[in-house]
Image (tube, rainbow, N blue to C red):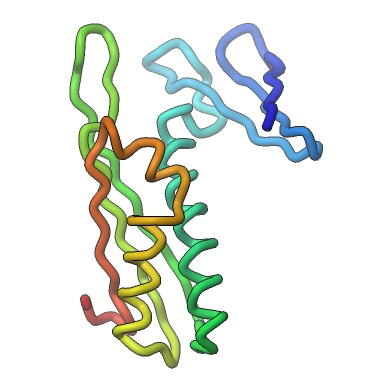
Length: 141
């Protein structure tokens, strides 16, 4: 797996590209000298957890023939200063599902994703606690 980065302006606005040609932009917040034209690198990490777990959970539920009408994820990262850096200490994920889905299967799919399959959360796990909860049809499981 390889990523290339190209600078787009005189500050911190970049375009990243993977080997398949897909691109993502990132920038720094204005207060940090950027132009706030795209997500920050730390926001992209949280987006990675959201996307990785979504792929896992939807795949598991589809294999179980569960009818997913809507899927939404909210991810919040809590950072702490360590020397000059501010890594995530805790990441809280809320998976919101709608459809004709068994509550047990929804919980099990999330558990499998976060405990076994999601490479992004597993990568961050040694330094940040990743918590998750599932809401099915507006009811927390």
